[in-house]
Image (cartoon, rainbow, N blue to C red):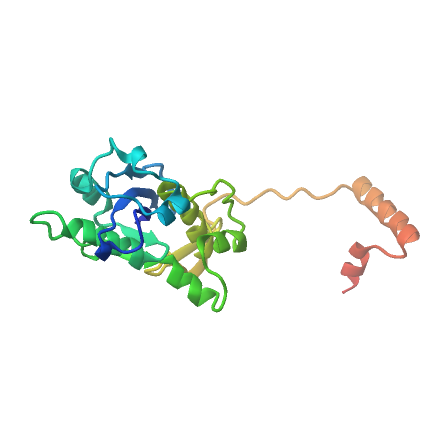
Length: 238
């Protein structure tokens, strides 16, 4: 199962007002494990970035002067995303911007939901924690995920943090002794205990010697005298 945790930063809030994507960050998970095959790209938007947006992510037009435009990276981005399950916090925002960028390309018919499945972790969190704050920072606090480096928003950093949050929300990164099946959102559906192979050799059981048992009983006698009864002997009486 290949999943891509994705985040974007933009020049403003609404692509219908001409705002553009200026940063894309993606983290790849295969079978719920980070692979290190991440994607990160800054983009030249050919327009001014809103002052309010700069306060959020700290990216300025000067920083993007030598960066490629979306048209130059679209083919590589599509190849990276195609067929994966996208995990996005507040998916309509990022998907709306990406679809708008693709739509602007001449002859292009790509849409995000046409090439990927999309999971919205904000919608998941609202179902799990109704009436509570479900921002990425709030979820980090709730699930004890380290976001101490998040002074400003950043697409790759936020995707990395969201990957940790998503794994926590959906049951942790791995199941040590359980074989878990996942539903379409990546949540655990059922857990089946793995049975040991009957052909495996049995573990050797080493019994305590008579001298060891005598020392053990003497130790319990001392505990009884000091504390008025040991928990081990009370357990034996139950």
